[in-house]
Length: 544
Image 1 (cartoon, one colour):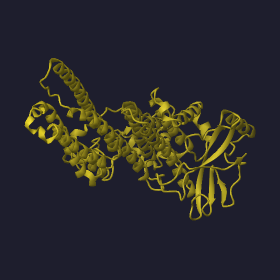
Image 2 (cartoon, one colour):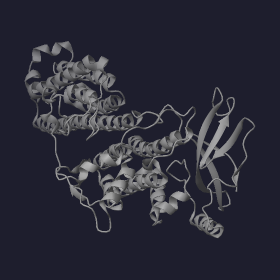
Image 3 (spheres, rainbow, N blue to C red):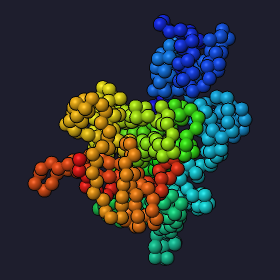
């Protein structure tokens, strides 16, 4: 996983040329929305402003704000602190220091520096090996018994294989009608098979796949039942018997190799399953980090938003590592890529939803949620995913990666983010909600001819079913749904976001269609979980 470099910003009260102390104080007061007397200590000899553990984008935001305010500031990188998981134990978690980044605690709930939740971190440290293997707690005993039976089965087969030639010499037992060497093999295979089924019960689908492969191993291993005993007879019979014995031992060797490969594969599956679980846990932590904020965000948004975004970057890093490291099947590749793109898109939706919350209560949208800042977050996410991709990976992402690449390329073509934000939808999915270059040029020309900015939603004409109505508030399109037209049980406001979709008809001609994405029913607080069908597409014709 890539290391996310952290930075610190410091300022000691030194002003830039062309500014006065009074003007800088006034600018800082407006910047932080505080009284000027609270800025006064910064210009004393014994005070220094210091902000640590910042990502690059946030640190640069601080630097730009200070420079615009007339205050000289310094940007420096912080040393990496590598924490070994083996070095962390419940006893080492002290009450006053974060157990992950060792920063002083300012809250009993989560760390302001790295964002972990202390209770969850303690549970993670205390979790046993069965949890890491992806076994449900109630199946822990079954899992342990399965491992015991598998080890016992392998031991029995190995021992019998070694002493087989000695057992086959017991001629006085041949009156039973079967070679005595058969019974130990049968017992060993039965123990191994029962252990495999119990393992499948505890591990789920991965265990079932293991059983399927074990059937072939058992079939090959049955060759071990063939006796290599040599009987006395003619020279030709002895030669044939010797040749047959050599062939049997070759087959036995192949069976042993296959068995060892199976054991190696089992160990690999264990590690892959643990990695998948750690990825999903990382996704959940990223989601919980965002859903923990109330409907009206409080505190330092410039800190909260990049913190959630960096969690998202960890998900992206881990996803790419898994796709590059493991030979996952198509379903697993689809699940990993879906997790990465879904969480990235939901993060953008979360930002837009916060904008709606401020807008709906008639409050001024804070700078951390304005169009320019949100667009910068989008660009950062697009760029990070595109830059992280290996050359051989995009084809394995099906169409999703291409959609992200298209989105990033459309943004990267614009040098002026502010200009782009003026023609961006107030709510969008962050995937294909972009104008074509022709549409952009037409819009910019019309806006310049009018001498003022053209409202994004002006002149919008929508054809809706009788059960749906709409009204426009600034850049927000509000749809009211009645009845069960889209599975709503009561009247509710539904925010709809649209994107530009280009498809080909049966004659090969390009046609352009507007689609709406349903974002939420009763507008869940702060975050759209999997229980909300965020990306259920339904077509609504639109004309400008």
